Image (cartoon, rainbow, N blue to C red; front, side, top):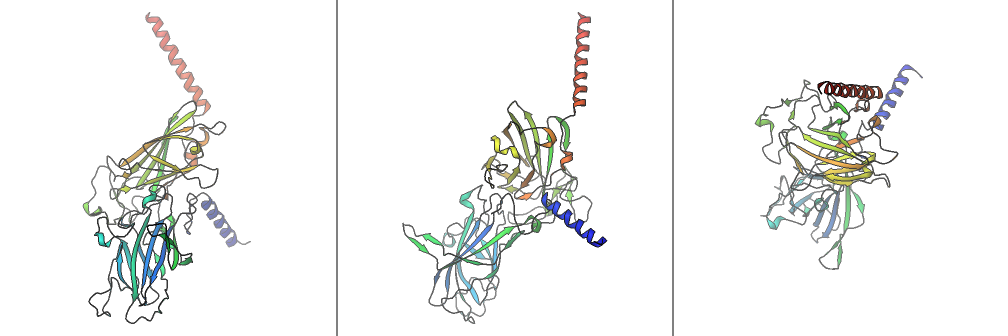
Length: 448
């Protein structure tokens, strides 16, 4: 094998190792913490009318365990395959009407675009425009945090433009679906058994045809850099291991901007409404991350041990509502109590229970406020020491993986984890303590 082949083989091996350690995210959206997580779009043809128009019902389900869809919410789009137009909608609206000049009637279609962009209605929308499960501003909860708010639904009446020649009774499913969120990639529509709905009694009705579209998330596609980092400390070591330098960015690099601690960011850098999207305005740190998670091993009891977890928002431009924190640690299977957070084990791999999701208590700490005096949330967790497994050695008490809002955080290197003092240091400390006690005792005897 030549020099070039050796270099190529070495590069491949390095990539494989990095992938194994989770340092390179999979582009296809697979998340080992949530292997079946996705956003599903369900397209139901409810009625085919005599004039060639159709009544359509669309659902958007967030089947992700801990990744929610935050404001400004989903923006569903697709490409029509024919000359279709949207005549009217309830539960959502198109952002643009488009060119409807081909229609001469008094009532023009709701949208004539080849690629319509649909958004959810805001809370408080007029009653006659609402539908079931609408009007949340496009925000969808994860399955774990609030199973009652993980879906959206809207209805629309579609037909042909005057030049369209679509055959009556034939529905061409659109293509190139997108939910308009960074990191999500949607599949082509695929046909599934028709949906069934209860009509308010014990009777079920059925859609004429149903297609599904599956959208998966990839952190690698969503952003070029991580958005959170982890720092570590323990009661048995004075060292505080900070977030790794340049975890999310480096000060001084082109395009990197930050605000010095204690200073107020410019108003132009801050959002002016809940639906504005502005770049992160972070506090100047060595790691440059908007979110820092600190894991502190606080106390060791005879049969238990206690950890304090603090999540700090260093972003001046954003509040994180309905945040979630996923941790992976082998002792989570023996978790006894969680103080001031909600907790749900993930249990994705049968008897292996080493991961779970923490999230805020509603109306108490479910919103992580922007950087400042109140820009943090914290909890303590109590875990049982598993005999034969638990140890303070080799950094065992620290998490294997942490993610915030579904994005994996940068961990310090394992060789930098706080370690137990070595025996020589312990013996020296004991000798020094003993000598001090003897000296004090001798002084007391002399005084007496």
